[in-house]
Amino acid sequence: MWDATLEPDVINYSAGISTCEKGGQWQRALALLTEMWDATLRPNIVSYSAGTSACEDAKTAGNVSVLRRVSEMRNAKLEPNVISYSVGFSTCETVDQF
Image 1 (cartoon, one colour):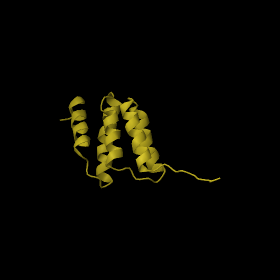
Image 2: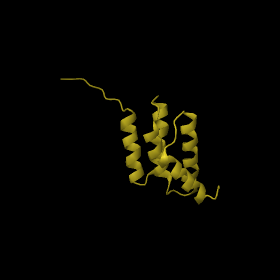
Image 3: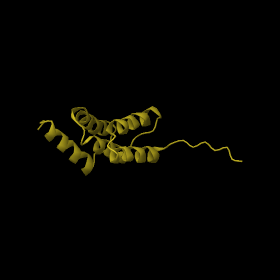
Image 4: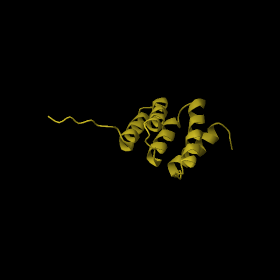
């Protein structure tokens, strides 16, 4: 018998974050992003885009989280993509930050 131990990777986490997005679970999506850092896995643009998209329809707390995630992407030297910027702009408009 094999004694295999499987560890989640960036792809697994990104898929989980995307699933949370589709299920309207923005808080869980953000928790998975944090968990990635705790597991010393560096979220990529897909991870962040799914995380920001998950927050798009949330109320004020989710809106603030979107702006934080876009800022985190920049700090992580990841260039936000069209999805990230669109969600960020939409969020700013929603919370009247323009």
